[in-house]
Length: 404
Image (cartoon, rainbow, N blue to C red; front, side, top):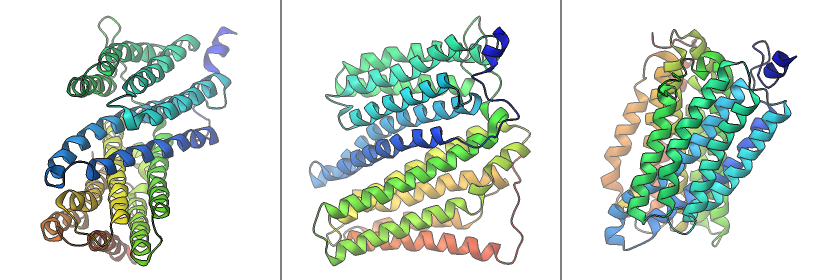
């Protein structure tokens, strides 16, 4: 009887690997969280003196990246958990819904995380990571996963110190302490949570549930793309609905369509197959996670750039704004290049060429109307999408061929 109780919270190997409605419901809170991250990015480019804005923006972009990485790690850890535990079991549902509420509080605290809401942000993050690990250690018996979450608990407990200490520190010290805390968290996950005397986890979630995690990551891309539509539509409503702003909204929508098209054709459809065919699914899965982090960051930067265009479509685009409008698509294409390598062990030429063209255009675009800069970015993305279509025309669908 005890054995049955132990197995109950876990997914059975013969169970369907598709994500459940609970996981899709969980993702809703991350639409809001990503919206808050984009809001911070826009503030990075619209505050302070124009002459100092490029330097200031780069520094504040780094601070916003810290917040995004914290949000990303919560989502990733939850995806790992639901890949191994059965979301139809009440204890697992309790963990997911508790994490969802905690993520909502975390998202609320993003705007002032480096100031007045720092304690809320840090304490919520720690409560989610430590609380999840502690709860799973308590409900699992007689299975390797109990040891895995015990190891993770040690690492999250260690990172809790700089997280909470940073919440009471001045801004520069806070940034350093939170960078240290994130480094502990990410390094622990990368190394399998090694603890002296207890060993480490040697089985990657990707080796056990690659199909499930592949689906979860493309769903997160959809969430990020949905955020761009929400942000651009909301931005239009915050000002006069005039021709130039409708054009800016149209360009934002077309950019989102191009990002969607470039992602899903064709690697986005076969990540699960690539992981299953790989001799090292854990290594390939980590590379897939990194590629998606780059792509989601690129989508959010693109969304921020679209909002800047909607703020002043016909003004003079300063260097920082040009960097945001063109840099987001370039970062996305960089992530998509890594993702293509994961699926096919190669990188097709349109992606690096697109990055180079975006970089080459940036100096020329300074001082032009932001709507022109956005149109140039859309044109480059359209060129990448069209080249994919031409290359695939008349050929059978390409199958997964991961690196060996």
